[in-house]
Structures are given as C-alpha cells and as structure tokens.
Length: 194
Image (cartoon, rainbow, N blue to C red; front, side, top):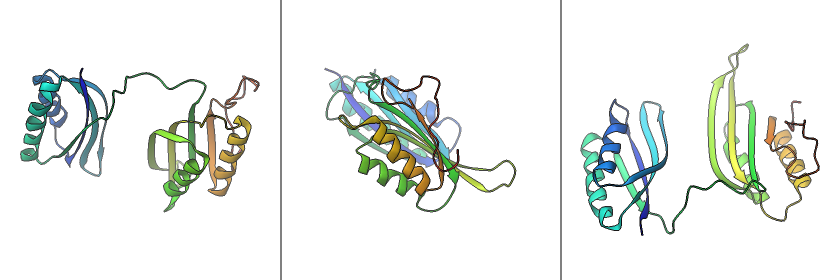
C-alpha cells in the first residue's frame, strides 16, 4: 500500500526550486498529489502531499534532504492514514470570505470564533491589499471549511454575521443557505457592511 507524505519547504526564493523538488519526487516514482506553493516576502514556502511506495520513502527523504544544500529547509511527515482526494460532503461544505480594514489580531479573532463554532477549517488564504480609492490596507480571508454536524444552519449564519459585525468585516457565505429551504437567488450574507 502506498504511503502519503507531507513535505514542507521554506527558503529564499529563486527560479527552479519547484523543478528541483518535482524532479526528486519523480525520480523515486512518487506521485505529486496536491500542493500549496507561494512566494512570501522574498521567500519560497510550500506544502506538498505525495504518495509513494513504501520502499521509496527513505530514498525520497534522502533526496529531499539534499535540498538543504540549496538553502531550503525541508520537513517530511508520514501521514497517519490515507487521505484520498475526495471532495468534502456538499451537505457540510462551507466557503466563507471576510473582507475589511486590516488590523493586528484579525486572524486570531476569526480563527477563535470559527473554533468556538466547531467549524473545521480545511483551507485558509489571507491577503492584505491597498483599497482602490484610499490606499488603506484591506484584509481578506477566504476560508474553506466544514460545518459541524447537528448545528442549525440558520444559527451558524447568525453567529458568522455576529462575528463579522464584531470584527467590522463584510461577510460572504457560500452556500448562503446552509440548508434546503433558503432562497436560491440569495448568494451573499452580509455582516457589518451590507
């Protein structure tokens, strides 16, 4: 049975880093399954999940450890169990986008509130950009998550709207109804700034 490995990478950005990682993965017959790679403040940062035959795990570790000579910090962890690339249950899938003025602690506030709601975060992407007219820093957080079973969908929306209002953020929720009876034309649930 093939094993899943989670590889994290961090180091000064330069052309060819992704090629160097991909070549080492392919050389041992491992399969690059999914990844998140980005450039942040001049650094390359990435997380890659690969599937490999058990006898390829140690050669892959040794090969990737060689990337430290190229300035990358590499960490490899074996996944505890297989994680097939299957989509989340549509009945519990949730996409939430928060937008508002940036300030210290905003990610902490959102993460804490989501944890209190029992919402499991599968993916979180944040950015800060300049507002078009004023140039003020605007924060955006896009969250892909799963709502907890048994929670009333309307109550979850109410609590997300309260979070948005408390943090002075706009809120968009998809699916906005989180249940079968909502208006199919309603696409956004707004928080502090409708």
